[in-house]
Length: 56
Image (tube, rainbow, N blue to C red; front, side, top):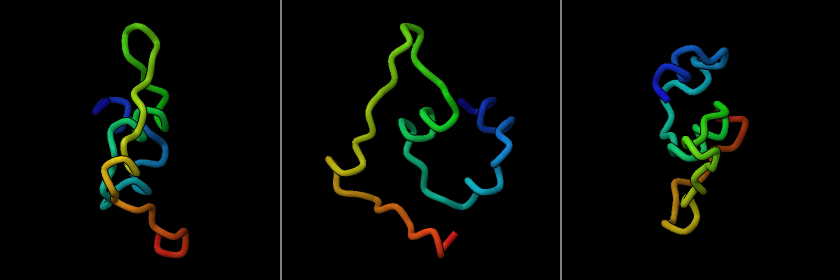
């Protein structure tokens, strides 16, 4: 995932934010060896909330 993140065109837009691994993997198109992708537990675990677009 680190190599894909480093090579991402929008790397600087992701900088300085709290990222959830499952969501970042989906954004970068990364899957497990079997092709599955983990689900984000953002709301199950209570946060962090997504920032409003005006705060980016």
